Image 1 (spheres, rainbow, N blue to C red):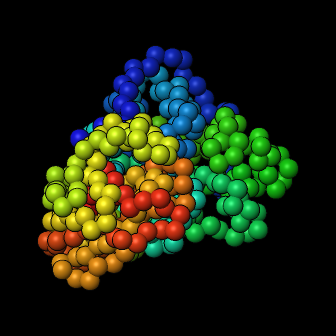
Image 2 (image 1 turned 45 degrees about the horizontal axis):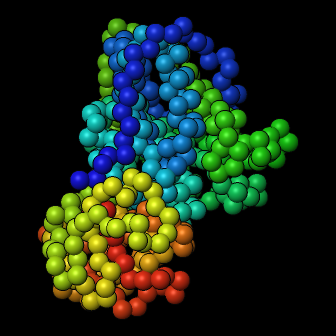
Length: 398
């Protein structure tokens, strides 16, 4: 079974309270929507709370996340916090929507949830609008269904290409798509990307000072202070005794009917083995390319020879796979319900030197119900690949 990347830490904090006088100036880039009364009730009145983070390497790293945790602990020194850290490098909102239940929701009801995927939807996945919408909307709807009282904040980080677009008055696709979802679901946005662009254009900040795609402490501090401003304003009024937890509304209609609002991982045990496929831990020492430790310790569903076949039964409207794709990543042919096979190239531009984690979709927009997926390794491959390998971590089903 995949070792969960989630880091859980239970902290009872007894430090002197703090004010938010050092918070970032209010600006057009702290976009407050909805209410944060539910988390205020949990932290201030009940004195316990579950705070979770999901995203890519920006969330996984020692960056804005621990700063936000520290700020919360200082504001509520007598509150017992549980923090769930579910950042996984390279993952996009598509992968996020399928791993959300395993990595976050399975840990118990979340009171305050922070999401970050704009950069990876851009530079890693290269998503068009549809996939950006489907991933982010899938995450938001799953959260609202799991715990309607959950308060949510989405932070938009930035890379050099996105920064250049913002400085030209344009909005990157991942940002505009995520903003469309957040406006529809009344979720607050911390537009750190535009704040950085504004400050750099004004000459009060440099890209080097900010720290790049993976910000240095000054860049992360700007984002954490913007979050502090949002929450300070939301929690500024004392709670009355009559105030109770109130469910956030959820629109009946989805922005995209194909959004991954029922996204989840399906075990490798549901795939047939033999015919060239087997579940095992690869001999990574003999396989060229960089590896990330979290993926080398787990069994994967693997095949390396053209013609290898497997069959998976599933119930849903879409199916894909969360994979690692290295220098030898091949092409898979996929067929749904005995239909025509279509090629899915597993090789990613980052696969040249790394067994890169990514989610590929084999089929979407299917009718609801039971389906059969057939996979076989193609004789063709990406021109830059050195092999025909497929290494599947989990199946992704919606």
